[in-house]
Length: 296
Image (cartoon, rainbow, N blue to C red; front, top):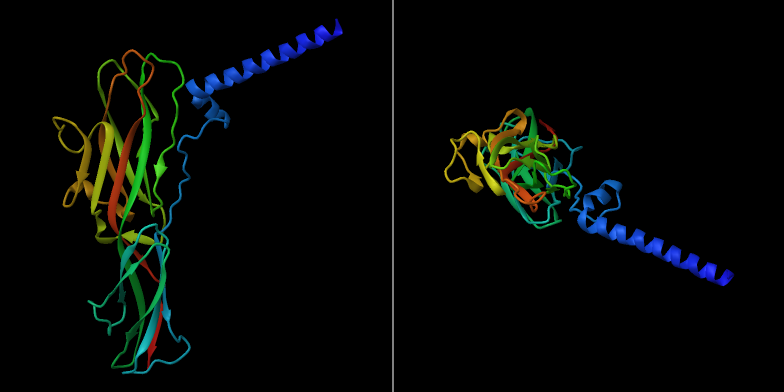
């Protein structure tokens, strides 16, 4: 009798464990967002947001303690480091002192992870005090991918959530007021959102005050809100100068309204995963520390 009771208890425990495991598998497959909210769900393309300048550079006198005399050469050592995953061509130009040729610059191509130093030479024909400054400019891209789903307005269940993907860059790209789950009525609906591009560091700036180009693409229909309604609507928009849509605000920021057409979800709870891809191309510049020059 005791042995039968033990066997029955073991079977009961086994059935209980099977129910628990089966329930977990069901939620894992059909409601992953519930597990995600508990911190035990499957990965949903979560990426940390990391911003930094793709290159760093410095400039300093080669022999800062030695005097500089008229008509004698002195050298500035410039060091460049490429933190990006692709080669970068950098133009380094000096400014700030009367003896500097305005057209003088050095063009250096850095491989991924490469560190290089070079010497720039100067001389002056008369005694003077001034302050030198070096600027390094290069072309770069920043990207942002946002995921969302259209939801039937009558659906009350859970919708899987996928985190945005950011590129490593000196800019923060985002979309204001957009939600990862967008309820849609039985007919297509237009909603206006704003693309926001803000410098995420204080080290550099966008050269010439404008972006070189901007690309917006989506699995849904989109168009720039400042333009008249395009017919037919597009899933990809490429904007290049001299479009006023690329004019930056003070401090290098950009705010561009665009319209996203919500597609109705018929016969089910929510749509398959949708996305918006944004890529910005620009010329970015960094400045060195100031270098005081005293020529006797």
